[in-house]
Image (cartoon, rainbow, N blue to C red; front, side, top):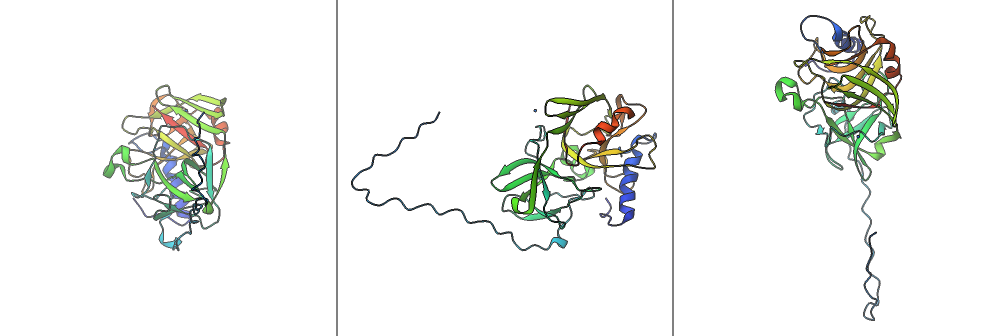
Length: 292
């Protein structure tokens, strides 16, 4: 795993990662009335009970943002919190950092900060789907890996989350979502219960499978080196079996490809070119649910 790039070369690297999505040869990553009983009033009760003091407001601790690892696709963060229910459909609630510096990620409400949630996970400002809420704290999906496949196995790679405080983020909602059913090879774009687009898709092989998890659209961008697809709709989930591709991370994506049926890809969802625009038109942060 290489250090997280910070230059134009970094952008080129991830583009190269996904450009390898459809090439032949050795396996490479594709780049759902109570009743209250009141006590009787008695003569002995001459004073009302003392009111309960309100819980004190939380004050964020001083943090050195520069010392926190950025939760971007290059990051491997074992301290990320596993998604509590990775097979459930996301609610549609999203958050985004409220300042350009990003938002601290905590391991629990009022816990310890372990990373920085960036405004732009890769290309373009994104929002992050909420998977749980406790008071003024939100647990959000991330684009990082919890561990490398060779070190933690397929089940320890994806489903990374962290907690953010409401004072550090803004909220929004969406009724859009993408679902992929691997057993039927079908990918669908929904608005609420309305189907906006549906297509057959090629999926990952047994050696380089498409991960079964919930994730979200991290970035949508063109790759001039990949003539088979106008753009790539890249997810926050990564290959569960490949540590890297060309020295970089291994996110999966939806993209066009001439062949688009069966277990043929390196993890990506290959779809016909004439339906790509529908999936490429969603906002960043759109929730994705991939089921077996």
